Picture (cartoon, rainbow, N blue to C red):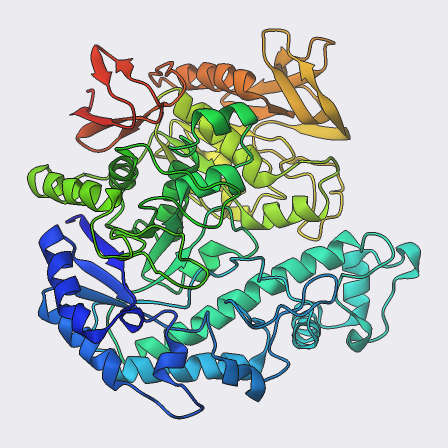
Length: 631
């Protein structure tokens, strides 16, 4: 598949006389795609029913006339001010009961049925008009950004009650599932059930988990309504642009209705804002971004998109929203782009074409400066375009290692962390980082995966409970499988399993106690575990213990279980042992050097701020190397 480049453009921000020159420069740069429209509702419809399509028609004509392919975004992330006058109760409400007001973006509650109808209306009108004139669609923009999935509005309360009626049928069944006999929490009617906020102490975890599932389903339904409206009038593929470490809704479920998964990659902003990096790592990668965070999301969204995925927004320079916003090292814009292609991206699009001189994002760099002169990112984008034209196609291939990531498990451990810092995403990222540090390529899989036969090693860390499909896949897998920690200890309602879990195929064990702790427990052979430790009754072989003798890694044949969260040293050592047991070759990579294998090539990326050597090749800071894939 041909790899392509693009950018995000806002014709409504610029004089119309500029559009032809912008389009020509985009095409000359080697861009294929241009995304427009996703924030333009007030320009399209300045008053209810007063539609102004003429300017957007001309913009589409100018862009396509230059040979560019348009991605049309539905503008539902920024409803105009008159929408709030029409639907004054459409705003999301935070957990403290405060409305999320007008004046920026994402000011709507997914559960407000009146606004959902408005979203479908504008999506339908756009699809009717542009269905055969654009090459792709994007629904809304960055679902979940700015903590906008969980809403405690009246609309959400009413929709939640309806959702509970469908799920549980009767309050007797709900009371039994949630264990409401505890603390006299029984309900006689679904209309008695409120949202799990503003309680005196923590709400029932089953109640909170049900609300998290409901909130995710609302995002799925909101997106599906727009997708259905577009598909009625257009055959062009539909995408949504997800974000980094936004886990409040199930991206696999949203992605099931889409043709393409895309995400918005801001490596340096994410390093300082959401990676959870140490101070040392922040200093080491301040101008490069975390060496594994982008790659994790590339692999995650490849799974969400069922192998079709893009980077819809790639950072081209300083952003405006992180605690600090440095400039990328020269070469990083190119490196990030090639890393996405090495992981199978179909397209990389930079945000944005020209830096805006006004409003909230005026400090956010574009490919052009506000005066239209090229910025640093422009020159690196041009280099990527030249290299794409001359280089062989990137051939995707299944990785030898798989890691299962599950959104519901993230919600569960946020609802009931048991120890400060326990986090499914963080656990998965740490193990992914350990695998990457050994030079291994990784596929990320959803929690209902039914076939693990192609993987030499599969990791299943921290899953709330195992689906029937995944349980059967683990039992049938010819490769090694590592489960834990905290895998399969609870029911889907967050109740302790009885008989005690985990119920692990091929590795019988029961956790009789789980403890969390603020310090680290040293392991006999080096490294430590942190945060979590299960005490198991099992007949499996113990192959790793803490310094005080508590079992940490168990084995029964080709099945392994890890009872604690390993730190970086322990993760690399233990995963290296498992990889060698699985017959995989490993490379002890220095910090900042990462490898990704494709069907024909090995890409080596240097995230370090200094040159590093790889197998006799010196790789400059913020540079990459393409080698033949080892046989």
